[in-house]
Image 1 (cartoon, rainbow, N blue to C red):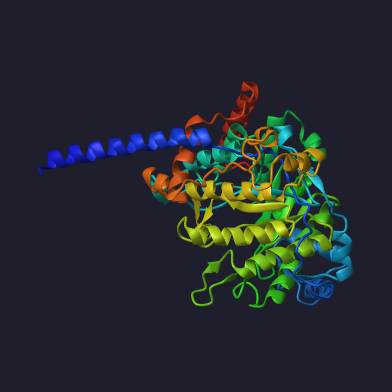
Image 2: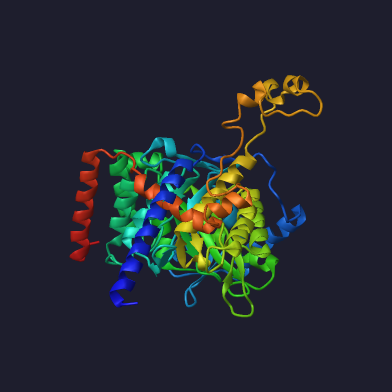
Length: 523
């Protein structure tokens, strides 16, 4: 075959595949189904892997660790504040040791529930009690889909992932980045990301709490989008930010500065130790929980020391490593158990709880699904109020995946339906409908069925319930393959939420001004 003939054959094949993809996308668009926006209200009792006695043992051991071992605090401002409060500070080692009474008194200042209001008040979140909200994947340096493969994170994909998260009601909030925007200048990329957040979504998003500057920019821009002053936003916060303690027992200055900048503005802070059993903590679950608890309590106490009653969230990110390689593992039994126990600890202190639903798989396959599901069950049945990384996380957090996002949304919607209350009203009991059908009959055409059949059951997003013959005739696609035309169709038809042109102009002006200031070295 000549090169020219081969080229024609390949071109025709590509066109055929493109036509098939467009056809599949149209079909997918017609079947996209989702739930109304809102919290998953979990009326099931939380699962508790710790007995009350064990919970108290971990509580006391955590306080003893803070008293006798302490936390390395890199910020002189924070060290001095704790010292004035009566903490013992080793200036040479930068270690702060705190009495249990001090920690408990400070933590007790934090509210047990609070509300975050984004630019669309209908998408406000009330964190605490038995309400759960799912968050988008956050922070991966890379992105992947079945069309273009694995690539370095970039702004175009960042915006596409924002649009997908905005589209689905089961996604309630965004972390600090859907994917890293490595093609933008490092010093100003947060401004472009905030502008995209406020243009393409109207849901709660995270400030990037690395130092004070990025936090202040997020607050100023959200205030512009909401049409309120910073003082008004202090009374009705809309931002949240997640800081990580550098386990074991080290609080970086950038993290403490970011947390305190958020709290100074009255915005919410999640304090999450990054604790992997066998690497950043001892290998035992009890030890990992002691360290997680000590680090989380210290960070929360720090915020309450400076800004009493500021909204905070107790964060847990405890899993284990593969002891053969040292690689992080997620969705393990240990991870699920830690998610449950973290909820017990958060409830012990009357605090909202952040957890995660992660996996360590390198591809969107059965492993990625069962590991996510394992972690998700731990988070939800531990009554996590915020479940980070609930949709799109892959490769141990190194990749944001389009197909994984769609499969995760399917799982989250299944969960939301499963946890919804059972209606036992007289009409729903259907006693008369049961009596109207003779023994051995069926209910397909009864009045009771016909009045409800269209929305009686959850309509799947990805699942294919055809018989084998019809499935083969349709192309024998597995769930991962079926996910591709779904996200394609959503992006092709999605319209961003309305934004007043004057507001958009004010946001763009702010970004332009701040880029100029940062370029000249101004704070």
